[in-house]
Length: 558
Ligand SMILES: Cc1cc2nc3c(=O)[nH]c(=O)nc-3n(C[C@H](O)[C@H](O)[C@H](O)COP(=O)(O)OP(=O)(O)OC[C@H]3O[C@@H](n4cnc5c(N)ncnc54)[C@H](O)[C@@H]3O)c2cc1C
Ligand code: SF4
Ligand code: SF4
Ligand code: SF4
Image (cartoon, rainbow, N blue to C red):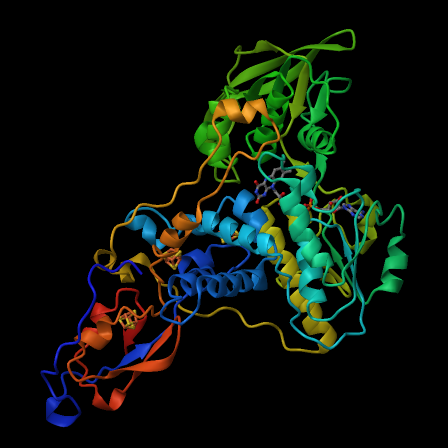
């Protein structure tokens, strides 16, 4: 685990015990904490658990392959898409990693991708959680990450699940939004197939409310999960917008990802600063156009994934900050230019970001053939409104329930990330299962958090963070579909798992065992991450040395 020196046990100096030999009345207690990476992963993956399974494999007697499989099985308890998430998740887990304070966060996202790809190469199937088949059938609307996550968690408990999907293929925005150079089809398809292999029925080209009436679904299924996403791009609301040459971001990406070579001409303006805008711009560039992104705030406020913005800039996409469209100009029907107005930042708005305020008299024109408005999306909820949509969106309680028999999750609750959709699909599956089996509500994770102030940073050896290999700009543009990110090697992977501090859970550094002068710490025969020592409290004299030395904050004096 990256400690500087091997430890050797010193001979006892004190005899310990009780009465006159007591140093204090405090006693050590082993308390597992919630690591910040886990608390900040929207899908709630036990990141520390799976990483330390591999890092501590030799201590626990696992071969590399056994540890890899155990680690992968830990991830898929929470998230059946590690290879996908290891590519597209903007990894909020890393933002809160305690190792950031030393020499850079553990590269959790790269690690997740590596282990996800390893399991795909091995062809590992997802496992069942309960063997007994359940009689109640569940209908899932939408085969995006929310719907598939819900279907997976129910199918592995033995429920018959049918997923209804309007599009010809499964994956939702992972397939029809995110471009191939970020997420290859074969990776997505393989992780989807593993879910279907559990016996989930997938009905493609089947829109609920168009091809199957909502009432029929209610009659067929005991519970319904709504995961329809948010596919309708919002319009800009400027004059000249209606007509050829103006597309929304989701419409453009959907057509491009469906295999159409969209004719965008030689010059394109993309409006917006989120992932959809950056993806649309980079796809338009790959169609041969010169691309300008127009964003009304500054780089600091841009919600798009930072590395995607960097790569777009490297590819010579121009970003005009502090500007907003005011009109689409046409010669007859043909689009001629986009008129934009300069903005400046005013007071913060409800999103907490500073509000863009127009600068009077600052309008100018950008000559373009196509305008792609990637400003926001909303659900196409009309078809399934009878299931409880309000003003076009679904609202759910904290268990994901909308009303009796109806649950929802993912972008149709609020625009979010794939990892949020995965969590909300799982959350709904858990509460559907509890409702159908008459089980008590799920318990909240009440483990105390482990802040960086409790980690002994100096105890851990400095090690540089693993960096992924990515294609050069020339290579990217020579083959527009080629995956840009090539991840990390097995050697990098094995080194990177060793950078995890194991925050709040024992990793057998032996410090307590070495420093305790009265031999309270006895090594266990059966070793597991977090379970290496038995504390013999009857010998303790309350000196506190063990808790003071424990580098990961596992030991408390109580
Ligand atoms: C361009 C773009 C890029 C993105 N990039 C990232 C990224 O890099 N990282 C990240 O984490 N997130 C990203 N996101 C967000 C992420 O894709 C979404 O948060 C996530 O896909 C939401 O999952 P979902 O299952 O709720 O909905 P979706 O993925 O949208 O899936 C909903 C599915 O429901 C189907 N459906 C809709 N109506 C019906 C109906 N009536 N009957 C049957 N089926 C229906 C749709 O066809 C669709 O397949 C991106 C989004 C976009 C648009
Ligand atoms: S899903 Fe995202 S936040 Fe969660 S572990 Fe993976 S990269 Fe981190
Ligand atoms: S060091 Fe490991 S356990 Fe601690 S926050 Fe980072 S990834 Fe999580
Ligand atoms: S000091 Fe080391 S061995 Fe002892 S409890 Fe803490 S992490 Fe585990």
